[in-house]
Image 1 (cartoon, helix red, strand yellow):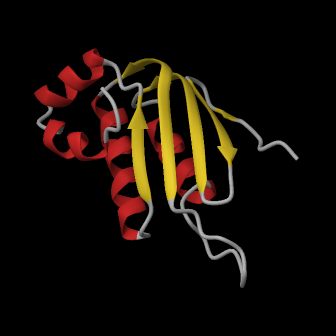
Image 2: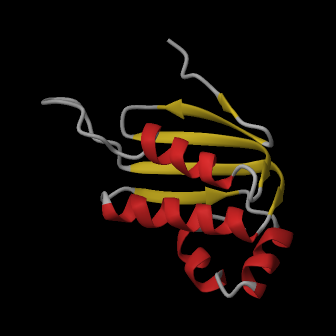
Length: 122
């Protein structure tokens, strides 16, 4: 059964789940308009939840931002909050294909040090 894609006004997230890992492909803009819903969907549907005895626990989440066309400071905060929530649940959250422009914005917002920890590749 295919994992459903979630679409909001400016961002679409498409999770691809494997036994111990989930890759979330994001398309569109993660801005003030969509950041809260992005964060809620990742938190509610992707972060580790008890899966019952004998079922594997999710250990890694990969956020693929290759098709994100814009991210603002609210979107950066939502990404950071997802990473912090993942760490609290003993789940590694990695961000891949993070655009250099977005990283510069993070630097201006003084979030670059926190983001550097979660970035798998810049």
